[in-house]
Length: 118
Image (tube, rainbow, N blue to C red; front, top):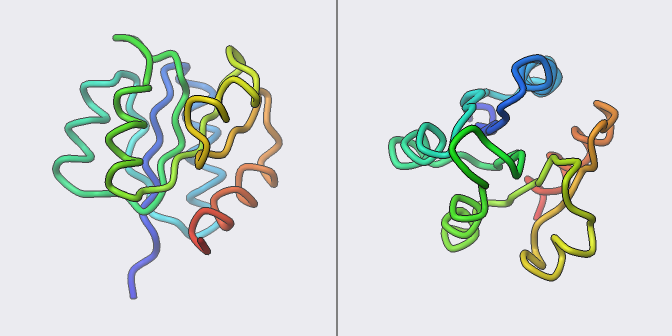
């Protein structure tokens, strides 16, 4: 069975590379990083990920539309952002998980594992 595919949408390249390295080193396949909504949406259309890690603010807008699409497809979403509080995100996306930047690598991996186990 192939490793789970994790989509990463993050517009800050250093953060994106660090996030991808963390997830890849844990044995997951990476889709991305995608710095904008349009690239991430296209990637999802081509191949559905098992989990998505989304920064809220991307180069061409926020990732809420993508999160809504993923949620409709029953794909777990982990928001990775410093712009919104966990409470704000829970109101809008009750099933999504959140990691507030800067987020330690072990916390990201715990959330990915939890998302995959649900």
